[in-house]
Length: 374
Image (cartoon, rainbow, N blue to C red; front, top):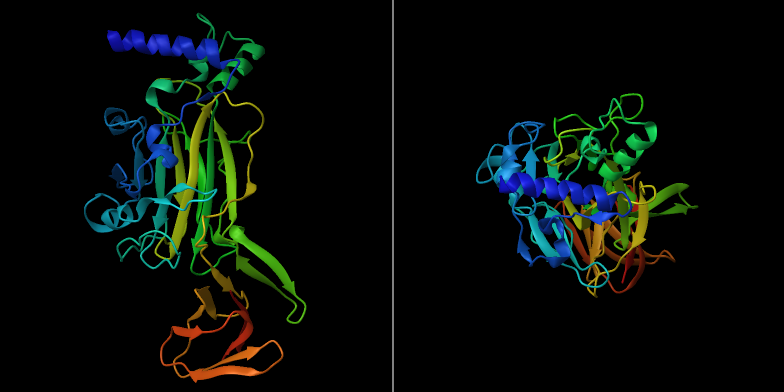
């Protein structure tokens, strides 16, 4: 009985206060800047694309936040693919204007920060589900005046109730992949109601966020010599995305925001600086906004990728690391004036070149890339 009256009080409080003011309802476990550094565990592995509607495990084991990993091959957090994926997650402090983040780092990721997870993850698609607080999640029905139903409500009452029941998810994040992709989706986000129905647009189609890719975190420069656009990772480039969702009925159960991954995570690092939830938000959601954030000194230097070439490389502490090199190939380094600086034959598919600071042309077989060593 106590819980019943508590929920009634919360519902009434929400109705009277949130019609006019937005309210932060972010669970504590999603406030990564406040969490201690170290391993961060997922709460549940569910062997399917969608967990049960209003999953009882979420409410019964809430702990001020809950995360479920989803895929037919993710049935355990302690064995198989679930255990490997769970080893990827950690809280890392990058300092500067970035600060603490939730870091998901695959076993083969070359990102400069964080600990790589266990090897052997091979799933090409899988989901992560984040949830709203069960006690602070209203619905359109619960926001209508007493005695008014969706059938008897005026248009103004319905609009007001829908606004009061709207929850805005905001995520600020950065993606690093060893092999840049401007086409392959890493993830998007889709909201689900208490009954498992996904968010739809006015035509009944799936209404998810844009698809985010590692190529979104690059700077672009047109090379007038090759007439190709060159893409370089920008470690200071972050994206903020906001996503509004509202459930029509069944208040008292959490909404689910599902991050739908579409690429293998082995060579990927995903950094989430902010994952917040706001009830009755003001203004329109920001679909995608570029932010500039910096670490506190040891700035990671990412791969520079020539999209026309199969040659891949990254630069770290004065060393050019070449990848995908054919064994026996001639590796030559030239100055911008054409002077030969270094020459060797590749004895491995990965080649390391120690160079003084400056700009170079690195040639491997028929592929040539311009490299900046700082």
